[in-house]
Image (cartoon, rainbow, N blue to C red; front, side, top):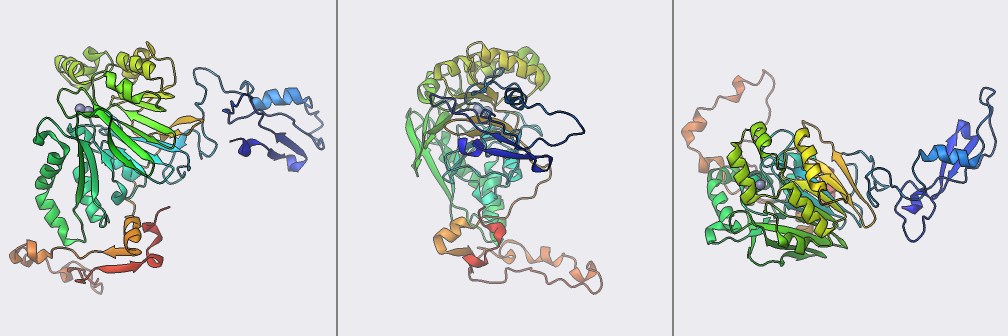
Length: 482
Ligand SMILES: [Zn+2]
Ligand SMILES: [Zn+2]
């Protein structure tokens, strides 16, 4: 951080005036202010400025250049130490797809879905965690959340390593789409990996849900099997009761889980640790001592929440008030409790999600969280809240994604790693295998609708019956990692 700011030379007025700005070590290792302290302004030569004098007192110039920021540390308002934008961010206000790489020692967390009810600005819950070692993880994959992943420029076949907190559909509703279209768009050489809790009976676990999904998607899977596809799913079902058990451990990344209290056995909270950085996510739960135990010392704590304004919010949201109250008191974390838990855990930043993002409710949520938690706080809502986390700094921004983005080309990494190039498998079926001849007989002869003189070569059959191999150096750039 200091290296970026050590010397900034600003050429002004044709270079006649040079400002030399230096970051000052604030001392005691508290090197947390990316703005540094501007001092030591050196004027080589004072130019003529329409007959006016220039201010030349270095102290006065410093005051102006600092814009009121106290020297050494950023301590204005209710922002806290260590809450400031990292110097490599292209914009301190917004994240935009494809503009920033996750740095080697950075964790980036994006809220891809943030509410239990669906609306255009809030898909169902999903949290995307990207690490500086190139790994990425998905915590819950609620209905519609896939939209924000695709808008963020992530290839469909890279949507993998999904950890489910529980099997309410608002936490896994996007998986059928990811499964089917990922298979269609290039996830040919690795399984879809889904991790989640068992339940009280076999039917209550994540493996049973996956089997049920496959059954539900029988028609779709077979229909899509006229394309090069692969349908393998790797399910890692852990014992829901194994508090603190390991759900994942690889490449220096460890994910642990613990039981959440969410009306029924088989709901979990998660914590991920990597490279001295960590985040935890309560999933849906009643306020829980295990959240405190396993989130302790975490950098970013994400709690689900509901504020205590059921009578109002249920009316606004179209939920019968007694259903709202009963749902919260049996399933969810009131914002007072979220604040109370944050205060026990003392994360570097506390965040709330799984909440409707509305002005009347946001003010209430903040007031309730603040009853007990006075430290750094930010909403993990609405969709596309982006959190950059490093050892020294945490910064939260709004991600900006287009309304009509196109899906990115599939990524060839898995194939290249396995085979040294892109292998395109043979489709398991032809149309003739799945469709009666009389239906194709009813198709209109293309000569009738293509204009005279225009005869596209139709690809009505997959042209080869062997897999294709495309050497690495001939794979299109769009199919390679950044
Ligand atoms: Zn939920
Ligand atoms: Zn739930």
